[in-house]
Amino acid sequence: MHLLKRMTLMGVAVVSLSGITYTAQTANASTYSTVSSTTMTKTAYHKKSTTGAVYNASHTKKVATLKGYPNTTWYATKKVVLKHNGKNAIYYQVKNGAGTKSGIIWHSYLTKGVAPFNVKYAKNAVAYDATDNKVVWSKSANTARPIASVSKLMTLYLVDKKVAGSGYSWSSKVKTNYSGLVAMGKDSACGGFRFTKSSYTVKQLYDAALIDSSNNAAIALGQWVAGGSTPTANKKFISMMNAQAKSWNLGKAKFVSSSGLEQSDLKAFGYSIGGADANMVSAKDVALIADHLITDYPSTLTTASVKSMTLSGQTLYNYNNMLSGRKYYQSSLKVDGLKTGYTPKAGYCFVGTGQKSGHNRIITVVLHDENEFTETQSIMNNAYSKNLL
Image (cartoon, rainbow, N blue to C red; front, side, top):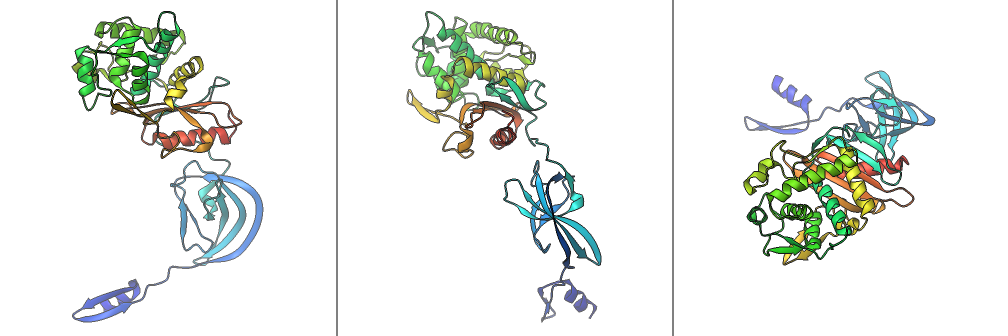
């Protein structure tokens, strides 16, 4: 009998015990009843902590958790008093700014004011106004850290600079027969464009480096800029990268690799130069490099917006998933570049750029991220919605 009584109180179930079947009824949760509802001036609130949730009007269904909606401003329009277990409690009727979630929430879970914007995963990030040349939002933007293939933006700048000078063109030939570069192209982890010829044009390798992030193409281009085709020229080119950074007063930029690969990976191909293992650059300095590149050589964006192309029988695939037709494309942002990057040490890195109608061009940088496109989208939308640029 004691067991049967306990089952009857527990909930709806069909229980077989010694061949006898008993059906138990669910005990209803304590109900909430509305005591009063008063219209209030629309007021902005955000989460006081990750605790708490928004419920439907009868408090029987959870609509959203505050933890699931970080950096969200909730707008209260009514004060609702509910009775629960014989006690009254004040709730606010709220809706998020996008208007996609609404309901009631206990007032103590909120604090007055607009939610401060932040990104969850990126260790370093920045939003830069490329028209007025100023940082409009940042997160640890002056801390130098590995930047993986985002490094290629500096390499490509120096390639553009040489092509713009006298005596060279996009049709100039670049030697690609050094054994280390050929081997790198065949490597599944460090490769990219496979060198099947002893030379390619500057434009071909530029496309491979920017669109497909080919590491051997970037190294070959750097050697060409430095006037050679071997690791000796590569070392000279890296000195040129650091000199260019110094001329721009980038105090948080130090390069040891033209491709962004760490030296621990480059060593197998004869391209370790000693010193630090990785390029160390801050998010702000990455934004400044990107700004110099697209300002001085705007045609870069034409190449950066190519989603895929075939070159010498090989497919160059652009991993920028904010371009049109891709998963994270948002038409209003008009993203047309710029560069992805990843190594285990650097994490996922991304430099994005676009220009929303009626606003200045934005350059965003996220370093060591896990959701680089989602967070870039959030950074861009935040900057535009708050008219920061």
